[in-house]
Length: 290
Length: 269
Image 1 (tube, one colour):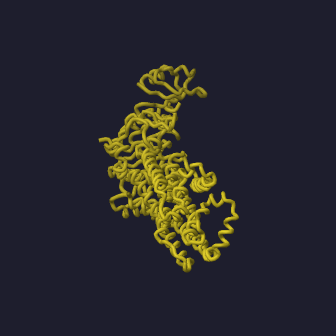
Image 2: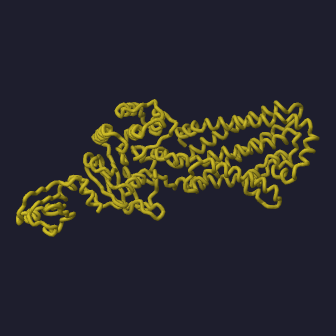
Image 3: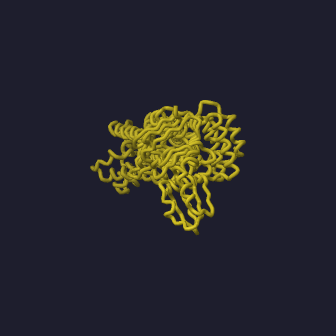
């Protein structure tokens, strides 16, 4: 059974599209990366899954249940960390966490203290006195304290220092190792690359590509840099070649397809230097966005 | 209904309830402290009032009040109490959902395993409890003020109860109407201008409806539905108007649920 199952989900805000015809599925135990620039529809998708907003058309199921009709039931097992956290200003951290825990049937006290200790959170401070990064930590603890089966993380690392980011990633990995499914939205590709097994790329509200992170990196694209005599951008006029850039007798391009075609072409040239490498996700990503 | 939300909401409003209750208590005691002087010189008072422009007396319903009687005087004091109750209830109504959306804590609450209907019901019951707590304090203050200053003059406690209960009906009106307006407009950035606007607006409308006599503004404003001078004079409610008032509240409440269950919670922008 898929943990998340989204079918032609569409959300319009008035006339402007939030997301259009988005479909994907996430299986149990996966860490699914959801990548796209700001305003591409990442948060809209997550807010639809939480039924904070209602779909214009299409449907979404979490744990096999429809999100619009079974919201409260589904949310029992969801941990949500928004990109920007806002809490009741007058409350103390500990009171907020207790308030959060009181919504769940199981006893969360022990887990709450474990997590607070791990994230080095001071429980007796007022929310209004906390820095942005510290509020974020409160968000992490309150999102995880009820041991959810599905984590919805919406650009979770913004505002965390690198050390805390690493701790956070370790935490997410540990949760995942216990069987927790993770839906991770981000515009920072490095972190998605480090963490996720599969990615969906969203652009202007539409899914552009869903792919295994390995196949995205390895099988599909190669980044080729060639330095040779008498090169010009037309030299590698092959199907599958994109993003050709010429620079001082060196050509850079992406290639998708049978690599032998490139090798044959190279064989016919007087090559000074050549690199064929895996493109970073960043480069693949830029490619999708052109 | 979620006990957790109810408790949180009730405690969040407790300070405001204290401030309103104590202010209104102070006001009632202050006004009643001048009642003995008023009543002793009923003759002078009535002469003084006769010199006021009739339109003004009409506007405040003072032509219906016998200010030398305990309940007549109380109905004048209760005019101001009503205005306070309206603004307080309006505050709670307008802020019930909009404050969380403005301070962006709605995301937190709504990602919890509770349904929208439960959230709204819990919030409404918490606000209602806050208002009733205020009413209890006001009732105590009213009985105390009357006991302290009535001297040997008699009054009908059942009429006082009738006036006090009319306060609750008035609060429900402003709570429900405030709530439905806050859900109809795109975003309530600050609660106070709205509740002051609604409170004073309907209050002035009630005053003008007296001035213009034949213009039927009284159907629109709760201050006419529940005019204390009329209640005291007849020792009864004007039943059709009260029913109209309750009907407006109930429709607002039903529409609020309908809107809230379908509402898109705005994100950070």
